[in-house]
Every structure is written in structure tokens, then in C-alpha cells.
Length: 562
Image (cartoon, rainbow, N blue to C red; front, side, top):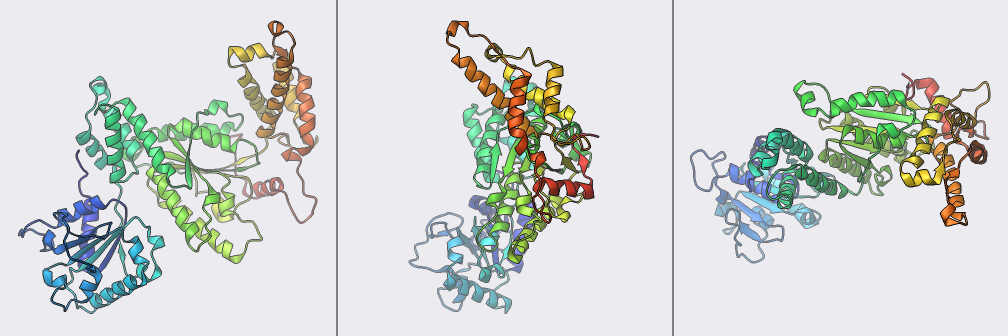
């Protein structure tokens, strides 16, 4: 199996770190990649062109299970109870590591060590001696561990220089695929397209994860690149994303055609879908990647449904960020959770990142403690910075059911901010038709439900009956999409029970559904409809009233009309 070439930028950063800092920290799990870079920097013999004038013999390694080994041969060095850090500090002793020509100390899986106060003191001593010039400038302790930087003890965090292993670029992945897996003969005519699709699927993952996926897909497709390879790779990429615990992969087969209303929003998103399906061309044309949309509006009006349909329209995975899992009980945990979630989303690009009820994480509601507000501001600051600086194809769909902080809602953060009101009469008709028609999609449904009486005129009258407004109020004071669906489901359930209760099984025929069936259900729901919600206190507003007041101020673009 071919392996990735050494990333030149990371290699140069590592060389610079070795020459300028006593302690380097690499927060990563891919130990073998670090080995490969070090072997590329240090030759195995005294070659004239050695970058640092040192060979691999200058490296002493402590493995993940605590053994001291020869870096090059990976064979154990049988020295009982040897403490590398003590040896470095005791550089005047005859048996010191430095006396043996060791200057680079590679310590793997160091997370547990760094929480030990005695280890912390030893590292502090080494850093102090290095600053005083008591050690050669090449002396370097390289700590490699999956533990993120946020979790480092404060006593250590200030001592170390951080080196991040970059994810492979699109060009690197493309080269690796071409050298690793041949295209199946039956797909030779579309080899370029297959390789491009496979490359895009693997973008955002680390070297180890890409190698692992390719090994797995090769086994499943007979060592050949096929259309199935892309499918299998996507499945495995989803499983990698799930490991975060904060982000979940949501399956979605909902199309724009199944979404009622929101014509303006759907039209705009169809244009974005064209761009998202041609990411390679966007890059060549030096155009900015689509950012995403913020959809603010009334509860139950299809914001979640449109989020699911966007991923399907774009032809990419849909990830859902659970904001409730962001908030941690320890200092810094919430911010660390957010960073991990966003990093996971980038690893899954190209994708749609759906943040449902985003106001729960970045709300502007009153009554928060100063500590809670500080956390919210830090979370929001990090999120907005990430949105501004990210270069990966992560399209954000954020939905909110309540007022948010003004800094977050201002235009420019997203491609557009949309306001979703309760559906108008024409939109209620559209939603009603889609919900009713889903019960006539197959032969069995058609044999159960007789829709002959539900003519276009009758359906329009049913939608009119779902209005909650007075004559002088906006026509959008009506049932939400969720409430319309609830009415349709209630009617169909009752009629289906009647169908089942017919005594003579052989004489069963479709149950007739009438306007009255709908009106009866509408009257039951109307008193509790969201559009009718009003606060009983003068100084307090319901979420619906708050959203209406907010829209008067901000005048966000309507999702319904252009």
C-alpha cells in the first residue's frame, strides 16, 4: 500500500520547532505519520546533506505503552526503570542521555504523563535550563497525544509549542488515490469523474482515516475503484463523524417538491445547489464558497423540513449539531465541545451542517447569569470566527424559533437571513395538497381513501378554515405547517379505523373523505393554534410575538415571496 508523502509545511514547522523550542506538542493520534516525518528529516547515516546535522541515532523514543526503544529499529532498549526526563535534567551524570548523543526525545501517548505534577516540574526545569543556554539548541522533547490542547494542564500549556498535523489537500488525496487503487475496467471511460468523486468524499479526513477507508473499500470492491467504492467510503466517513457524540449524521430523502410554501427560499437554494454540485469549478474560478442561511421564524412552519431537503438537493451528507450537548459543566468544556463539533463537520465536507434551534446556544434572552453570558459570548465569538475563516465546503443551515442576539442576526454572517411566517392562504393550500396527496401514492392507499369529494375548491375552503386572523389582520395568521399536517393525519387515522371496522371484509371499499371531516378536526385545534398565542402579561411576550416584533425591526427577507 502506498503511503502519503510528507507534508512540506508540517515538516518545515517541525524543523523550526526543533531548532527553537525545548518542548513541542502534537495533538494527534497518528503516531506513524510523525515517525515518517522524523525519518524524512533525520537520515539513518551521517549524510552531508542532513538538515539538522543529526541522524536518527539522536532520537530516543518512549512508546505508547511506556517502553524505551530505538527510534529507527523499534527494538527495546533494555534499561530498567529509565526516566527520560530525569536523564535529561541530570545532564552532568555519566549515564545521561545527552552523553549518549541523544537530543530528540519522542514521547507518545503522553496525556496521562502530563497530568502528573512531578512530570510537570521536570518539564518546567528542562524549559528553564534550555532558556539559560544549558542545553544544545537541538535538544527537543516531542510529545504526541490525541488529547486536545484545551485539555492540557495550565502548568504545561504555556511551556509547549503546538504543531498541528494538517489534513491532506485535495491534490494530495487525488495523487494518493491514483497510486493506491486502479479504476475498474468497466468504469475506465469515467475514471476522472470517479476519482474526483472519491477525492471529494475523502476530503477533510486525516491521513490515517483516508488510508483506513481505502483499505476497507479495496477489500469490498476487489481492489478496484468503482461506483460502489464511493458509496462504501461515504458510509465509513459517516461512522467517523458519529464518533464525536455532538454531531449526528441524518438520513434525508426529502426533496424540495415535498416542501410546501417558502417559494423564494427554495428558488434561492436551487441556485446554491448548482454551485455546490460544482465545487471544483468554483475553486478554479476563485469564487467564494456558499456560506449558508439563517432561517428565523414561527415554530412548526417547515424550517427543519427545508434543512433536510437542502442536503438532498445539494447531493451531500446532512449533519445535525445538537446544541444541547455543547454546554459542559466544566470551565472551557463548552468551547472545546464546539471546536470538536466544527472540526468534525469540516472532516465530513462537503456537507450541510444543520444547527436546529440555534438560539439555545447563542440566545439573547434575559435572565442569564453573568457566567452564562460569558460562555455564550465565547461560543458565539468562536463560531462566527470559524464561519468567517473556514475554507471547507460546509454549508450551514441554522434555524431559530426565537429572537437571537443582534450580532448574530446581522446580514453578512450568512448568505442570507430568511423570515418564515405562518403560511399564507395559497401556501396553506400548497401544504394541504402535499399532505393529502401522500395518502394516494400507491394502489393500497387509493383503495382505502376515497378523495373524490376533495376537489380543488373544497381544499381551498379547508385551507381558508385554517385561518386564525380577524378580517383586518394579515392572512398569514393561520395554521402552521405542523398543525396542517396534524389535521390531515388525524382525519386519515379516523377514516382508516372506519375502513378496518367494516363488517364484511369482501365488501370493503374506499372510505369517502369529506370537507366536514377536516372542519371537525380544525375546530379542535384552532383554540391552541400557535398563531393565536398571546401573552397574558403586558410586559412579557410569547415567542411568536417576539418574532413578529423582531421582524418589524430587521425586516429579514421573506422565505415566501421574492
